[in-house]
Image (cartoon, rainbow, N blue to C red):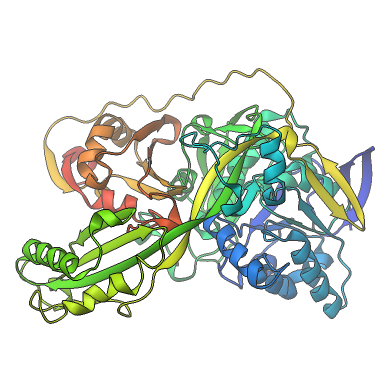
Amino acid sequence: MRRLAVRGCGGWGLQYGLGMAEPGAPIRIANCSGFYGDRLSAAKEMVDGGTIDVLTGDWLAELTMLILARTRAKRPGGGFAGTFVKQMEQVMGQCLDSGIKVVTNAGGLDPDGCADAVAEVAAKLGLAPRIAYVNGDDLLPRLQELVDAGVDLAHFEDGSPVGDISRFLTANAYLGCWGIVEALDQGADIVITGRVTDAAVVCGPAAWHHGWGRSDWDALAGAVVAGHIIECGAQATGGNYSFFTEVPGMERIGFPWADVAADGSCVIGKHDGTGGEVSIGTITSQLLYEIGGPGYLGPDVTSRFDTIQLEQVERDRVRVFGTKGEPPPSTLKVAMNEVGVYRNDVAIMMTGLDIEAKAKLLDDAFWVACPYEPDDFASVRRQIIRTDHVDPTSNETAAAMWKLTVKDPDERKVGRAFSNALTEIGLASIPGLYGVGSGPSGGSQYGVYRPAVVPAALVPSYVHLDGRTTMIESVAPAASVSVEPRNGPSAVAPSGPTETVPLGRVIGTRSGDKGGNANLGVFVRSDAAWAWIDDFLTVDRLRVLLPEAGDLVIDRHRFPAIRSLNFLIHGLLEEGVASSTRQDGQAKSLGEWLRARVVNVPAALLGH
């Protein structure tokens, strides 16, 4: 056993463990989950596949909280990620034997229930881990109290008032890492949290191991960046990577780990012998996932993504360094899910010639058959989804889709009376008509994601271990910090002849959802390509290339040091993932669509 110095409430004490990093040495924090439903065997792969100090995973997303709320409604106390409990059954004994700490947000809406479930598994296995849970994030029982105290819970994006609070199913503040630090200080083997930030499950163990204070802004910012990189699991090792054809072993890629050093810098890697790769490309791609501007806001620190530097130190090892941090805002973000109105969708396939004319006839005939007018609904969206080819060589490649979506507070209006109109025109409309899905159906209620903010001083976290509860304040120290963005390469964009090719010959992308907004990150892999794309891909150009975003507000942010741009497209996903009427409601494919657009590219960038 190796002796570890750990920072406790009363100073520095001694703790014994197997496999833990020595004091001052980097701490290896491994990920085994990027979402609720990720690879079940990943925890065992990370424990068996190489030396690690901490096993973490991210189970929560905005949509996941809504799913867990529905689970809890059916099974009180069960609003947690059950797959985590199954993983603990597989690896708990090995983790205890090796001194591997486990830190997870799988507690979801019921971290205490998750802790109880893990304790039951431990008892069945004859084990006795010290299990802590951290809560305080669940504001649903406190909403009226907060409103009465003058907290307006205004919408994070548009400032609209909160209105009737009885409609909310969940309301969870994003807590930071200090509850996790306290639980580890008290000797917890397993720490289960509710809604903390995705990066907190990495930042917490790093801050605990290195003894950081709350004003160690740069170190904290570096750990947050490490957490952001590995939080989505295999997305850092080749998953969802634009240049996937260059990556070996994509059929079964390994999960990532981060060696976080005392200054907050880290090396990202994966266990040797596993598929995928860790490269500047895969890391840059993940850095751009679901972000906004250069200041990445969090409850513990504001991490400046425009100061990050990357270095490929060896195969499958990328050093991430130079990150600067600033004090966090005085408020915490609150993820609120409310009961939405009702919606219904109908869809018809149109095949062959005259697609536009067929879509018009379908629309006209449907509304004649429907007992309601379009203006009777709160929302009507018509879409023609063109997947048809010229001179198609199969029936499927000759087809396009006409889709109609309606939303309204009146369930009856969007129910069978609406969808039955499709049946009525089945033999009396376009040639070749056939439907998709299961046919006419009633409307369904959906959830709406609504972000808000709350003063951090009103939302402490609570650490529960061995029957003892410790309160941890969420307020960060006041400080004035000035950070300058890091300069990018000084290359000049190539001139000369151009070729008309897909933009993806030069750029990689990573896109995703930010509530009702979509983020679209763009990166390149050479200095000359950066000089060109920085000039070429303006907001106006993006509107032309992605017509769906044509009339939406778009923010453009530059990250020169990692040769990247990030666009935040406001309102593309309407009221959020659960209510989006786009075929890709999470904007996962938005970047690949951009890469497929054909533009004039300098021939010098194409590697001929």
